Length: 133
Image (cartoon, rainbow, N blue to C red; front, side):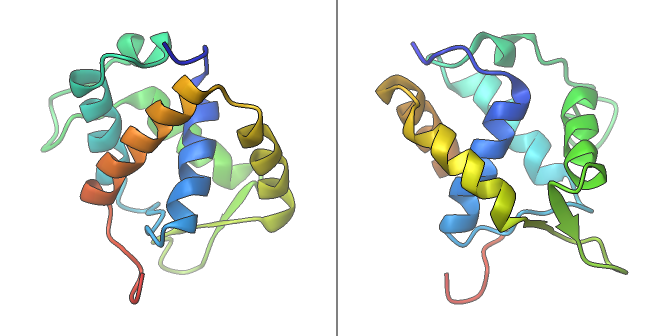
C-alpha cells in the first residue's frame, strides 16, 4: 500500500514526472486531469486513501472534482506553476520549486513510486504530448 499522500502531493509528483516524459501539463482544459483522477479512483486498488474520498460531479460531459480544480488553480495563483498569457493552455513548472519536489520524490516508498508510475501511464493516455516527446 502506498504511503499516505494528499491530493497536492500526488498532483505535484505527477506534474514533475509528466513534464520529464514530455506530457503537456494542461491548464485551461482541465478534462485530462479530472479523467486521470477519476480513472485512478476506479482502476487502481493500491492507492492513497484520499483518492477514495474524491467526489466527482457527473453533470458535465466528463466527471469533475471540485477539490482537484481548486488545487490546480492554487498551483497557478501561488506562483508554483505559471501559465502563459493569453491562452492559459498549459502549466509551466518553476525549476526552483520543482527542485524541492524532486528531493521529496527521492524519499517516497517503492509502493508509492509504483502507484505514481501506474498513474503516469494513465496520464500518458489522457493528456496530450509535446512534439518530439
